Length: 128
Image (cartoon, rainbow, N blue to C red; front, side, top):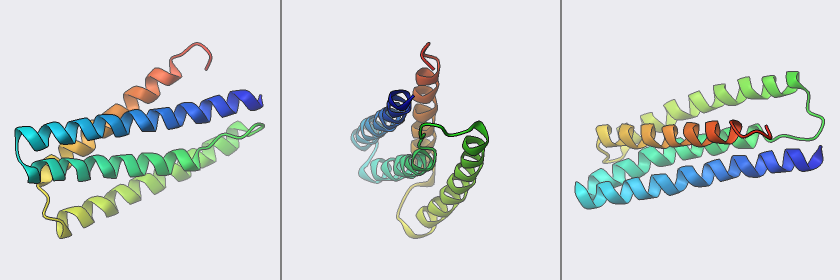
């Protein structure tokens, strides 16, 4: 039981690493293909998604013996905190940083999609 929860936690951090790698590659490509400001904006958008994903993973850490009710409560709290954090960080970014809103949202969307695809691939394995 203990090994299984450790493996799942390690898998969650692997999902986060995949998201970070995709975020860096996307930001570099846009930096090269479009402009420095567009690349910076994309990096900020991907960072918002990555930070909120990391926050959620920290809250949802599995421990041996956690009940389904406890996990559901953690999930509800994590989603609420993630939603509020996204709104706050996007507002700060769009008001105070010299970022291009379209590229911030593109970066955020691609990083979030990478997070969900990696998470879905992890959950589709037979040992889950």
